[in-house]
Image (cartoon, rainbow, N blue to C red; front, side, top):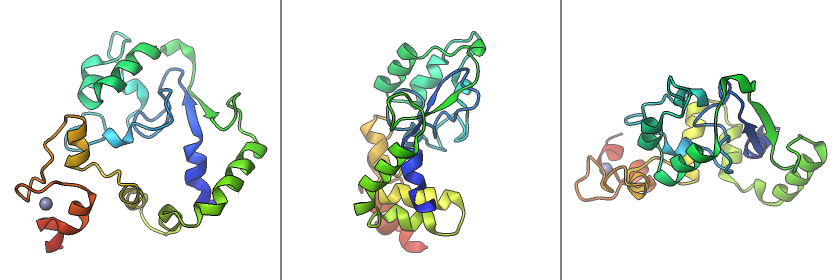
Length: 189
Ligand SMILES: [Zn+2]
């Protein structure tokens, strides 16, 4: 099952209740089929990586608009503001299986997913990554690298959050390859 775990995670999302048991950055909870993890920047983001959704709520029970505006691109923070109203009284969050229209997990739909994926799944680098022993954070790092999802300045600049350049190599763009291979710092390791 371990090699297929990303497939399961990929088709799991959350129906938000009070937001207490759902990870703001790691879970799919805001109505689109991707997480907000890619916007996490440990040097910039005021929310910890494992923050729950209700940690983005202000004392008055409304979304913490300045916080959302700070950490997310406008089109995403605006969507969250408009579509989601958290309520302390609305009960716990619940998991949804997005491979079924009714959101309920079924063996049939998971079998179909696996059957469709199996033809190419063995070629995906994350099969190797996720089946290796080692700290989870390194697996996540290499998974991001293999999907070109590292939080580089090149990516951040596309959201207007940073200049393109590597802070250590004047005039060179900081993309994934630069971080792993070409950067002055990488060559020192
Ligand atoms: Zn560099």
